[in-house]
Amino acid sequence: MDKSQGRVTRDAAETAALPPVVTASGHRGLVMDEKLIFEQGVEGRCGVDLPEPPPVASRLGGLERKGPIGLPGLSEPQVIRHFTRLSQKNFAIDAGLYPLGSCTMKHNPRLNEKMARLPGFADVHPLQPASTVQGALAVMDELSRWLTTLTGMPAVALSPGAGAHGEYCGMVAIRAAIEARGEAATRKRVLVPESAHGTNPATAAAIGFDVDPIPAEAGGRVDVAALKAKLGPDVAAIMLTNPNTCGLFEAEIVEIARLVREAGGYFYCDGANFNAIAGRVRPADLGIDAMHINLHKTFSTPHGGGGPGSGPVVFSARLAEFVPVPYLVRDGEGLSLVEHKADAPQSLGRLKGFHGQMGMFVRALTYMLSHGADGIRQASNDAVLNANYVMARLQDVMTPSFAGPCMHECLFDDRFLKDTGVTTLDFAKAMIDEGYHPMTMYFPLVVHGAMLIEPTESETKESLDLFVDTMRALVERAKAGEVAYFRAAPRLTPRRRLDETRAARAPVLRWKKPVSALPQAAE
Ligand SMILES: *Cc1c(COP(=O)(O)O)cnc(C)c1O
Image (cartoon, rainbow, N blue to C red; front, side, top):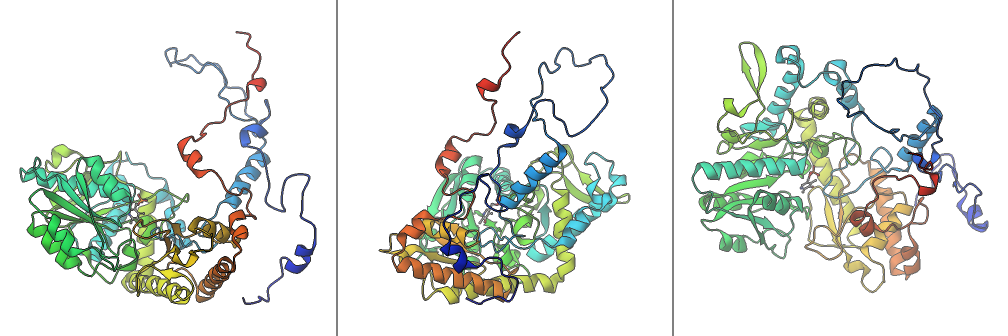
């Protein structure tokens, strides 16, 4: 690997020759091993000095809090240090390459943040009269125009709060359309390819549809013959991701759309992978009826612990009348929101308290306007180029699941680890020691030990080269029989291998004061 000319941060050979470090504090350099904030608290300590409030007559009708609220007693520097350290333990796209497939962890341009913080956007309240928020409504209107233009679809719902919520919105619209046709009792089946994101079948099932999986053909795409065999008068819809979660463009998508329509069904497209095709393909031209767009993936609004999602849904003319409230209309007074189902009888109703994630709308529109139509197209091109570069440079040592070229992400399986004793999980843990967030593991389920890598367009060639060289070095170690090295990874993190199953099944979400520390009951 390249030796850099920058300041050396560690002399690896010299460090290796020294005995292992055991510190008295438990800290390791700047990585602190500290107590929970509640354990750090000391009763009576406070970061602020406020005057005692004057006594007021309670208007809570006997519902006042009876005991102390239980906040830890801390000074301001204790609080600042605690949260600063926590933030430094978190991996983020601002810290390094984040190749988590299907998640489009791309750079969040700071211009977006600057715009979202403008007081006219940051300080508006959703209950303000429309006449006082015309600027904010204009942002929503302009964002709608970009989304409908990029997708070629006539209608859009901005309110869904994330991708899965968008799926729910789209599928409820499809159910409404089926009800309007008087076929609610018979059209109950939703076809979902085996490679689909788990949210697709979950959404269909949550709404009460029966989920019917469609197998993939050997090349990783939907088996059109198998799909044909499954079509019938009871099919409500297909839910398809394009490009799919194997990173492949569904080349037969126009034919698939035609077949589903001919059978009287609707075509829901999971648009989470829009970053591969934005500015190049208009979903309307593919025959799609509804598709959600993850603003927090394709249009760079922060996610993965960095901010709320936002999942607007675009609709074809066949579904446009069913869009949820609120939606924007323009009249003599300017822009306003149709808020109530009484004013929009065909609407599927309301999905969310207000109109959606305003901060994300501002960020996404800033991204669109600063990139321009040509820039969005360029971003998609570069995302696909980067994924193909990674695939091309790894395919001789790892095992790509399907022949390339791929779209914005490349899929490997664990055949290259056969007989090494190293699993996909071990390999991912070793990547953490190398300073990389692992790729998506064990998804999609259609290949064994999946490793789905999505570098995005944010990375430079040097960054991709370092990633590829690191992956190649790990592959070499695995093939050289260093199984113990992988089993012990990660070794350079504050914690090693956590029991993730137990953490999910039996989460401890609330700190409880140890019994010995409780004041002796006097009441
Ligand atoms: C991310 C993703 C979703 C779900 O989006 P959320 O915003 O996380 O709810 C659905 N499908 C695919 C293919 C995705 O990658």
